[in-house]
Length: 161
Picture (cartoon, rainbow, N blue to C red):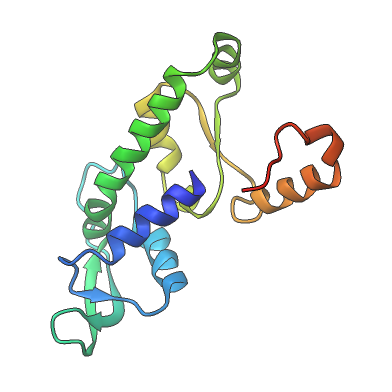
């Protein structure tokens, strides 16, 4: 889901209806992670945050204030697509692995795992326990490194693209 999140967040950030696009992709992602707020919150948030970037209409630098609610709304369709993809994967999961998922749950990794309460939303939507990895930003790279160190053990799973 890590690369899917990156693709989805890029699309949301550069959508034509957005009035500002940040010139630094990493800053935009960091802002999204920090600004999302509680996805499952019932009462509206009054927190606003300045976002600096380029106005897509005029092409000039601009600063706009957005709310946590604005950010959550912008990401809602993306999160729905991610939930749909998770459900599709679960439907095609062998029964013996499904039993493990019921017991141990899903673990979120990558930058998308940093969205506040994304684990709760995915758990609510899938009915499975969902956890965020201890260090979601680097655990994929560390695990890949360990797999490459044990190439013979993981040779059937590792392939060149």
